[in-house]
Image (cartoon, rainbow, N blue to C red; front, side, top):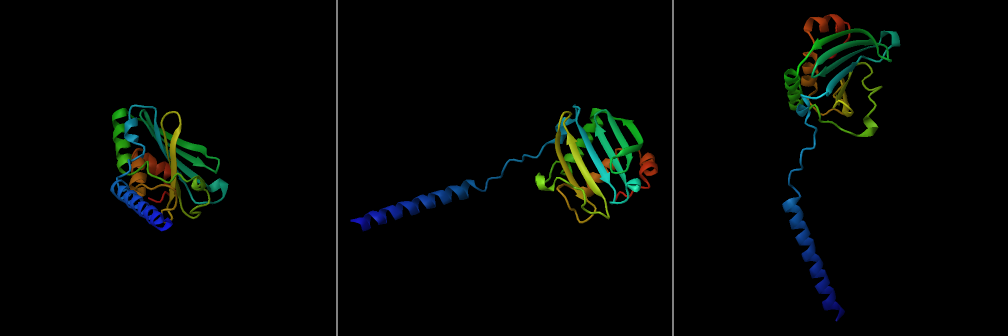
Amino acid sequence: MARPLLTVLVGIGIVVLIIVLIVKLMGGNSPQPDTTLDVSKYANSAATATLLIDSPTNLNQEHHQVKITVSQTLNTLDIMQGYQGSVTDSRTYENNSTAFGAFLQSLKLMGFAKGNNDKTLADYRGYCPNGDRYVLTFNDGQTDKFTYWTTSCSHQGTYKGNRGGTLELFRRQIAQKDFDRLAGSVSLGF
């Protein structure tokens, strides 16, 4: 009597397992929705996109950083000295929502909002000590929505977008003559 009951229970278990596997196969491969932030929707806001270029690890007095900040109203280039980021020179250019919208759409297509949010990788210091570190930040006008980083050393970091294209896009938001003159002594890696 126990044997037929055990056979029925095993049979029911196999049928349930087959049904679960079929359902999983049919629905489990459906594409997941893209949860990447659409930065292009911020063209008419107080949002800012920032690139910080941190030069090779060296003596504090010789250490340089270049920061490019782009917003709806202004594009700013800051040249900074030392690890505390003392601004030694700066240039600001007027911007508008149409130009900012084109910039944000281009960033979107470069994968600007794609990255690894692993908190254990949040600190970029010490990586690529003989090269440059590139820190990319997007702020919606109130809070930082993300901060990713990469390096000139074998694409280390949390940034998963098109590194070269993104860096060049930021560089083109500043007048070439000013960029070359002010940041010319800083190794930028692009």
